[in-house]
Amino acid sequence: MKFVNFKIEDKKLIGVLANDEDKIIALNDLYADKTFCCMQDVIEQLNEDDIKDIQTKLDDENNDFKSYKLSEVKLLSPIERPIHDILCVGVNYQAHLEEASERAKNFKKTSNDAVYFGKRAIKIIGTNEDVQACLDIDNALDYEVELAVIIGKTGKNIPVDKIEDYIFGYSIFNDFSSRRLQLKHMQWFKGKSLDTYSAMGPVILHKSALPFPVEVDIKCSVNGELRQNSNTKLFLNDIPKVVSELSQGMTLEAGDIIATGTPSGVGMGYKPGKWLKSGDEVVCEIPPIGKLINKIK
Image (cartoon, rainbow, N blue to C red; front, top):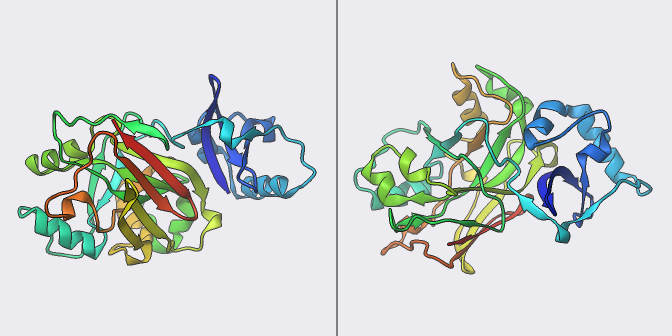
């Protein structure tokens, strides 16, 4: 089941893709007794029985719910304004760790412990929205395709074997990064947090659609050139460990976004670096979820 945040004319709605994925049904039309103004409402209000009920309605060939053609709407980021900074996992694939260490001599990682950092995102852009590149500040603009985990209910000190209970679903995240800023400040926060440097979409795939733990292909292309090509089974720190570890002594809330790290093939990994420039098109793909497409302006 795929949840979407979309705009038609001047109206924003939250919906679910029909089984043929050509149409969207607004959740407010499915539930007269509930109001869904944003994806946060969906995450907080829908329980497992509701998810099954929605699927039953979608499977009913005689349903007459109002629908919108996907081709006639504008998809927005499923979560445009996150409740907190995005929680990011750094260098979570061995090959990316090696390329990062080679290019950034002052970066050292001497253990298998996960690297965590925050990424500020006042507003997350969606698929087919432009990155407003700040190339005058730093022209070493890079891409990072990542699997995003959307937390489904609030928890603290969550055991590893209970993690799936706390997940709502998954999306594609592009962690656009200004590499020189990132390395200049040592802390990665500034170089990761420029406006429009967070992209997510095109949907949130409900957790029920994937086996757990999640093992999916993950790819990124720039102007049609395949740059990143891996699988999340190659995580150094998998989703159960990451979510459980983050929750130790620190509350995770419904709606929190965890970006689980990028594989090798980022622009920084090339010699010379393959930095993004105005006019470039970046396509991130995780097949069960879809494609996240952004152009650089």
